[in-house]
Image 1 (tube, helix red, strand yellow):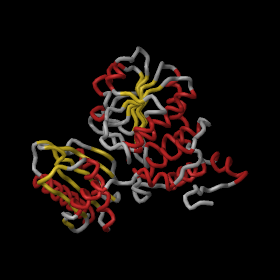
Image 2: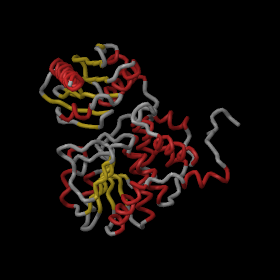
Image 3: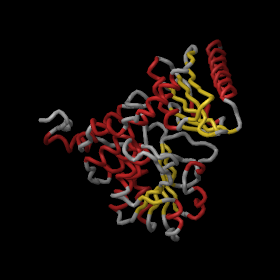
Image 4: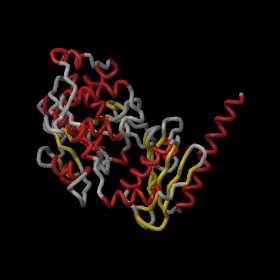
Length: 356
């Protein structure tokens, strides 16, 4: 056996019973409703969020399989373009374009027909989908997400926002298993990469069900080494993240990293916030300019503090554990002060509640 050969758990004749034991009664009804909506429509447009990531893209690929099982043609809508197609999400997207119907929102507009279905994945906000301006053209809209709802949440009878789940890929894995759809090793890798991303390698919001899901994907052929390679960073990203984290200022239970005199990629700011969680803090923030007048802020939490709620105040959002915001016409100093005052306000409220 070579050192790079995939090693996955095998349960022999008990493998099927192990997978069959993966039952979520809370999702069985949701699964049937989703299938009914898909079956009663024409073709399906699957819309992940802007700046698609592994969770959104893995979930989208998984849902194409469910559409296919119901005899429906599906299209994944992605408007993002990546300069580097040799690594990370750019590489994955390039590969998937040769296997699946991946189109732009403009191309989607040209083929939309009455009674088509729109499926929004890994987001629930109308402002974060490339198909946003065409929402009113769809009578059938399905939302599958694990982030908290906000003021822009899409209103539809088929809204399944399960913020207790680790990732959208965890939800979609269940739906695939419930429908008896074959999960190939490649698909298992895509789904596992989404779970790894959104749990930050199983240290945030990973429940026993999440671990069970991951075990099932490994049984189905997911290769942990291949998933790790999907996340490999370029040297330019390493330098940018290192520069940003090097400016981190530590406080009692949180850390803030910011640089005001250069422009970053949003992905690098997000990566810096994740790296800072390794230093034993409850909350980490990273921020920097992504263009001349826009600041991107990424926040991560161990769950004691709801960073999603904080970012909502800035027009962003996310979950309790991971959130982002983009702010225009403000300075880095103003945003740092906002973080300090928000955390102080929350801590003061907790002190007051504890004293009662």
